[in-house]
Amino acid sequence: MAFEDYKTKESVVIVYTGEGKGKTSASVGLLARSLGSGWNVAFIQFIKHWTVGEHTFIEAIQPVFGEKLLFHKGGKGFYDAGDLSAEGVSEAEHKTVAQETFDLAFKAAIEGGYDLVICDEINNAVNHKLVSKAQLKKLIQKRHPKTSLCLTGRDFPKDLLPLVDIATNMTKIRHHFDDKYLANKGIDY
Image (cartoon, rainbow, N blue to C red):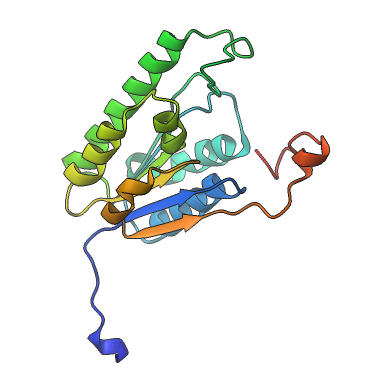
């Protein structure tokens, strides 16, 4: 097939998933590429509420891009239904904040004001049942036809893969955490 036989899509759904490192980093790279192309971008983050490197970066570039960039830090921290002690936040609080974050993402995706909506860590929220798989499916299917969507986090539901255009599985080959080393600022967060 010749190059001129290929066509373009008005928008795409991209998934970065898997156990390996780099899902959020890939979405921040997509954010940079999209803003650099003049797009309106919403970066909506589930789970992470503490300040991490991408927050500092996005907050620093926010004045440059103004209304072209929506940044929302949702979530109450890492969630594990069996262990809430680390964060001191109840399951109900986690779910309420995840639902509020989802509502913002859904609104951004369906209204057509953004060329790209990035839902960072949404797959984790779905995996932990803070957001339902049905909600994720609805987000994908009901998004504005001109709005691309990027969904990150571990454990993207395999049965939803036919609904996406690009899916990348970040595979861990080796990570120093397995040798009992904590995450490094600037590298892991």
